[in-house]
Image (tube, rainbow over all chains, first blue to last red; front, top):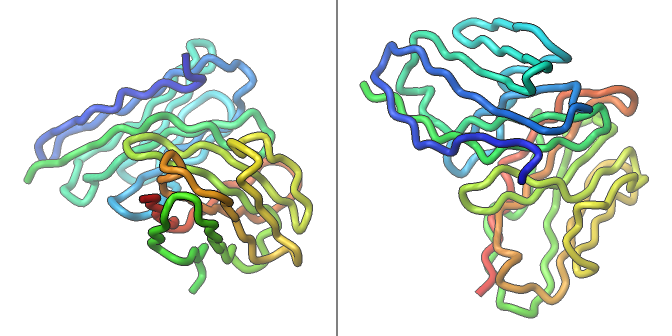
Length: 110
Length: 115
């Protein structure tokens, strides 16, 4: 079993919908939680960076961390076709290396 | 440019050849990381440098993989006697600090294909 589980999708939604992406993890030592967006043939681009439990909002994006359930989420409001990409969750115990989920492939249909 | 730069973007090699992949981190970034991303998967950690010191190489899959960062800036990932299972995208990331935890910023990777 992998330390970080993420549904690979694919997920397809109409433009303007609210998108919910999730990851679960097994290592209770994880303290730092990130969401990256990766377009085809590009490197991962950092979207959200949070420490410990709680919510963080940045524009149309909201990240939630529930350490008691070992569950993190990313919400995208008013989704746009330009949001179509693979979304990767990543986490770290505070040591430097990141552990990634498999990535969820998202398509926003105009 | 201000971002992490990797070269070459694409590399094709025959099985058994040696390859070298280069990473130029963001200027002033102390920490540098290499990850391997197989098709349809998330990146997997290979190794980590703080300045010129290689502090963690636990993710290197075999002794055919070697990384260096001799002057604490540019890094090279070398793969000797390549095999087909080495085909993947190799990503480099850098972060600003050495202490605590800092966000990592990624380059666009080198796509390696072993024939």
